[in-house]
Image (tube, rainbow, N blue to C red):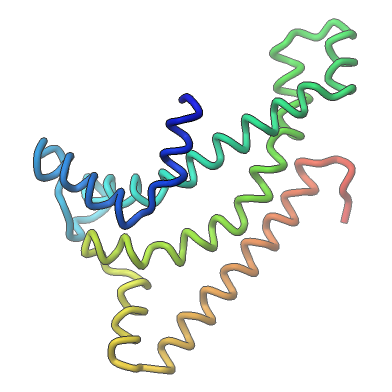
Length: 176
């Protein structure tokens, strides 16, 4: 992927990408169903693609920049000087350091992914927490609204905790 494709993926919001994908793949090409829940098969391709495009593009940019930075570091130069093959240098030494920006981004990204499903569930008529949240707001069901917000808050905390624990795995300098 070139840089302009990644920028397009990052800048295109879910509420624009979803209807465009439905228009192209469901209403013009007739390859995929446009909406409704039909189980874990072809019905999930368009919603998953809609939700994941922004994150895939951003993770690709983070991975590229992280790996370029790590590959210029002194310990990579030392590993190459020892005579290791380029494959070993990248897989054994560079990947762990190059993926640190991706790990840091993944915690908040998973939290935004949960909250971003509200729009996608509405576009593709999927049952889920987002539809419950919208219906609770329309019906002024305050206990349900508070429960959903509390659940999402706990999910954010858990994802950030998992990211902090993953740091110890990827960066040997960090110990808990």
